[in-house]
Length: 219
Image 1 (tube, rainbow, N blue to C red):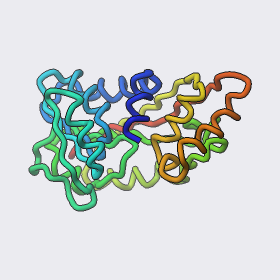
Image 2: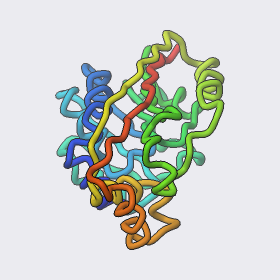
Image 3: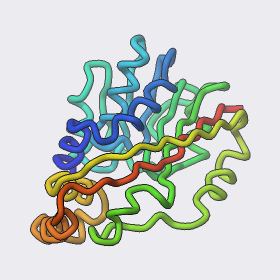
């Protein structure tokens, strides 16, 4: 999964999302990436906030090792987000939740008053062209309502921004995008390659990036 994510990001396929997240982090001094994965989003945030330090939190030791190497001002902690964020009260200017589980109470605790919670969630149209043939998970209904309920108690000035783009995918990229998520745990790379070969039988396929970036300020 980590290697697949590195290849997808190196190819620039998620650049519009990375750029949107990084732009929201300008001026921050402490950035916490809750569920940071291999660290691409945190590294981009630290490039945009040139005085900041960054903490990537992830349950996977493989992701944590990767994230620790991504940026000289970033480091990693192996942590279960549901057990609490190992960060002091009010220490963070920004918390990132990018395609990751969200612990609203802990996020509110570690953010300074006025600090930003930046959340990226997939829309139903995200990668819709390849979800079924690559046996990827569908986006569940009601995510927007759940997110609104999560931020209601401790956050305001909620801004919602769609981020949409289109990418061309050949067979290796199709396999890697599927391997980035749960499909990579449930199917072998050979099985993913067989599905990808069918999808691109007539050439590379275009798929839609369709996510929502929500920025909420700590009350």
